[in-house]
Length: 390
Image (cartoon, rainbow, N blue to C red; front, side, top):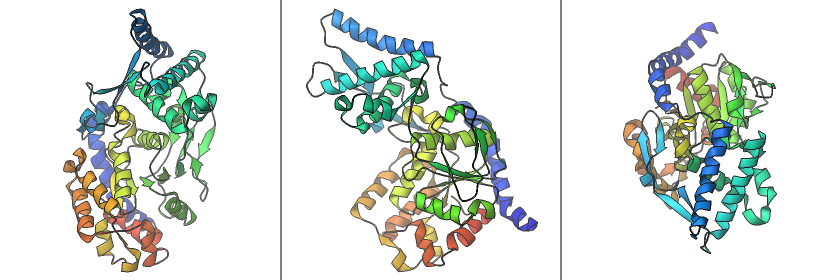
């Protein structure tokens, strides 16, 4: 058994050594603005309000200028950071005297008030709490979520500095123990039961782990299957985490926290389809809408473990387990291939072009068409043993 594990992790140890050579460069340039002091936070809010009051004193309608978080022209790409918002970015104006934006103006001002009180009293609230503070004004939870991110971007502070938390949807399991800010000890090594990802990643301390790698799993169903199969025990020690599809901010912060603390290889296991590839890119390079927090949300060292389009041919996955690409899939692939970061990933480009040519996609579960235990007992062990990632 000992020689088997030595062989299994030889590629992993080599990879980690290569990553550690780059770690100083990466962490130095990726170190963004840390949480600012409460006084500075209050000052920034007061400066925004002062600008509005000044407009009123001049008999002008108050206007808020929000950085445009949905415009690719505002984004630059750095291989060591990912997608980041340019310092000089175009803005969207929210006017108080315009019928189309007056409601949003009122919503933003209300959330500014809530944040100011939270920081002042050193207390915290969830985005859900804010929504239920005035459901008629906000209209939907989505409006609150978007405005909180707008304010974070506008004030150039991490969201945690706003004292606003989000309920995490991610799960984590494996060789990992840590302490929450309130002193609660979290043990993620309980076998078939996963722990919820913390909603206060910044407060995590005393991380202890002997893990050789971290594996991000796209879908909850696959994550649960690996738990049931005792994957972390069979390939012990490792850490698995899932954001249950498109990851929330806390799941991305947790992946980044593990990288900053442990400096071990981080792999992604996603479906061989455009949606899965995009989710992988979010973990590795960040997202357009959250590019202002790229330093703390992206992990450029992430590697694509599977499911690769080339795996479908190499493993001769049965035809009935493959799914034809839809027009929407084809459009998404074209869009992904035009992203600025793909030029630095020729192997990823080849895999995506192969998908374009074959015009098929597949879910991770398609491997069960080869054998019920193929994913856990053959596919992943061989991938990890022989360096089958890109």
